[in-house]
Length: 94
Image 1 (cartoon, one colour):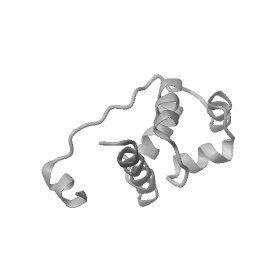
Image 2 (cartoon, one colour):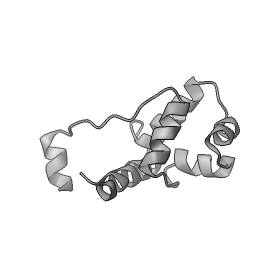
Image 3 (spheres, one colour):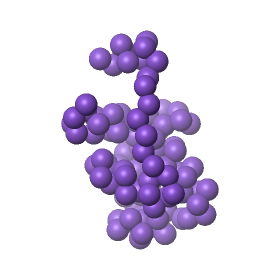
């Protein structure tokens, strides 16, 4: 899997937040921020970004590079892990 593939997965996962998927990447970022007791503005400041951009990320309309995602996860005391998809899901995407 190359950088473009990972970016596409990240973009797709962020987009799923708008569909109300509680397990989406965007929802997980929001939940991790809330669990850390940080406001969007506080996290954005630590991340070096604006609160509106952080909001867009959390609702699935923002963009993150792989490096950004790693850095954001670290700020939240998390790490990015790729997991195998169930066969029927990976077949549908591939």
